[in-house]
Length: 210
Length: 232
Image 1: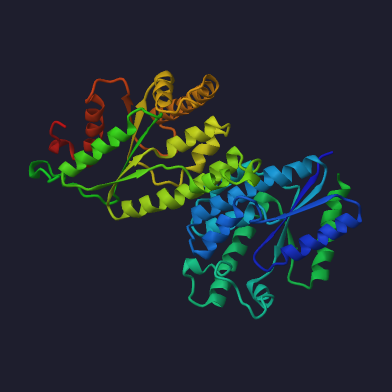
Image 2: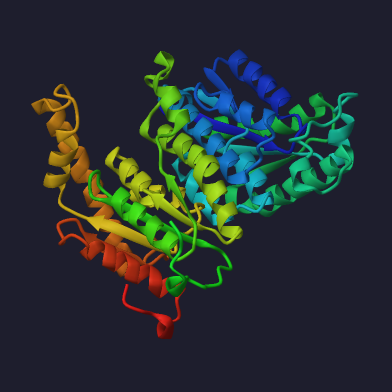
């Protein structure tokens, strides 16, 4: 039997990583074999991505190609072997975040879709939806980093304002592509327990249908 | 070299000019580009030559023993494309915006041909390189695989010229040529390659000087109004 690919997507600070960890624990408790993978953790592309961010090189085509290399490596080395072994793969972000970030920065959407055509379609994509004000409240004192705030777009010199504007654009992208990519929208504004209670039945439904 | 005032090209470059040479190893691309640079110089126009060099990211990854399984054809293609965007695509776009003339010794076709020869899908590889600035002219150096293999191996050390390596290299060159031919055919039929750029085919076995004349005529057709043209 093949495995399942479950993707958690959403804007920054929407709780993806928290819920990916929770989901992993729950699935393991129920006896499922689970592999968790997240953006920019590949052997070959993670360092170039970090270097590009550190040097503030924000060419959107170069950046999305590096993220595509990162994903291609993880698909070939982690995701596909895990699926073939019958495991549940939890992907904390997938093709959609790099596509949203790049298209928001002016890269052609059709080109992006063809670029990422090597990626297998997920069995379920949970879109954790939060408004920028809630996301900002989760930032703590540290505030948004330059990349999360989309400072390269010149939306505002103020990082907080830029974060709101940029995250709103990303949120719009996810909403506009919700039907096309079959995102299951989860209202992620609440406390983790409340959000988990919304996620669980959706995942249960997927597992029941195996 | 001082410009010949009678030959100065007075064409307005709103976007600059990008001319690229494509073809197998040893097919005369560098000679064409060098000749083109001299031709522009004689006409009072400076040009910038860029070369499609091996990707630093891929070279570094290939040297990492941990990367033996991770550096697959697709990962290498994506890393190389990211590198090319930074080192070639973005700088060339800036030069073209400033109205400069850029001559490229190999460009996207070479990358596409190498990726297809390594087993990747042609359409995917064509799409991968679409964001590179579209050439105004592609000079495709058309030749047969046999002579390209002979020329390439003649300059390699004896170890590389061994029968087994030679055969593997030969098969790789034939696959490269196959993709170049498909791209040339696509350009003839108006399909994207990935750009709608005009393509001039140069025969590597043509008489000396013939290809240079063809290339110059193609460039003049781009930059001069028909009435202003003199023999190349």
